[in-house]
Length: 438
Ligand code: AMO
Image (cartoon, rainbow, N blue to C red):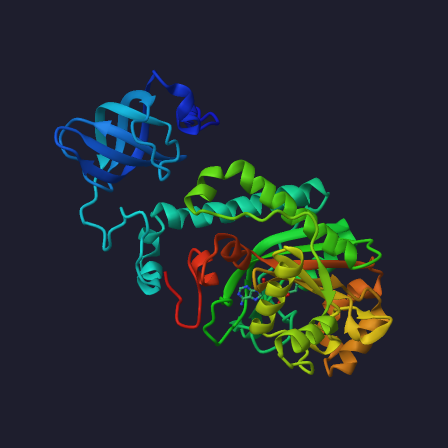
């Protein structure tokens, strides 16, 4: 018997290669690009922390081979921005091949831009993601989640985990997947709405970052059938404005975190990470009026904004204020789910909001009904059977704090930060009406 102690090998060199100029180092990585130059070769080697340039004199090596490189660090002769530490290169004295591909890649992955069509990109996701610019999208996504999570924890939110197989859908509408649960009808959760609301009665402030499911029967650039919802719910609020303020702070913190910790990835993708100091806000009804007068878009009787209207409003706000974000508040009650609180000053409107960013809705949020009689009355008005939702309204019956929150779509946020044409491109393994694999 032998003892297993905690730990895994970590390389100070790979974390900060520029600090090792003049020193002998060794590290492991995969040859991304091999360029023969006569009697030597330039290699780009993908490592745990980025891509390094290696100069090597020796027998030819295969792209895609996993290697152990031994050599010395020196200032770089060519400063390539594709390399994560462009200021240095490694002159290899020895390269040991650890494993070698038996087949060439189905497409040329060594180009600076992959340029393959989306079907191939997604069919071959496990390979196409190896491209540095594809991988970078998901590093940015990781940074966004980490920045947001840090902010949530710093503001005393408890992280919760809620079921994804549920008895009732929370959001209404037809976009719900049903399944057979040992003879009972069940659904895939459209959101953790009910659960996060209960949990304000336990922890006061909660968040969850997890998958949710929407049976979208159309193929659009803004919909996927499984996405990651960043859900927040906060108790003891006096107004839904506090929820909006909280989201402004969370986005500000996440973008700062990206700038501080993902500089190489941001450079590789040429990101424009927005500065968020404050976010303008306008009422839904004002927004409809503006669209009519300024853009001749007369859909004033529609209880929601169309994608075209969202785009125009963002354009207008950017022109007027410079902000790439805008909150739209007071959505019509008719369009919001039953749990949304109506405005006491106008019960046709809710104290709710959407946040639009670069032309697309990325968040819905608002204050919720916390009173038992009010929520049951609203369900009855909508023809819903309160008995089916007793598990939810019990929380209201036994007392619930005034509360509110929001749901932020991680893939849409990533899409817009990176500047991708579709939300699917910001999803590692997208699910849409025609795709269930890989
Ligand atoms: P809503 O249904 O508006 O609200 O969803 C919240 C956010 O989730 C994202 N989103 C999607 N992203 C990709 N594909 C989809 N099919 C998709 N559908 C929604 C959007 C959207 O703004 N329970 C409420 C939130 C709350 O009030 O707390 C809810 O789920 O970015």
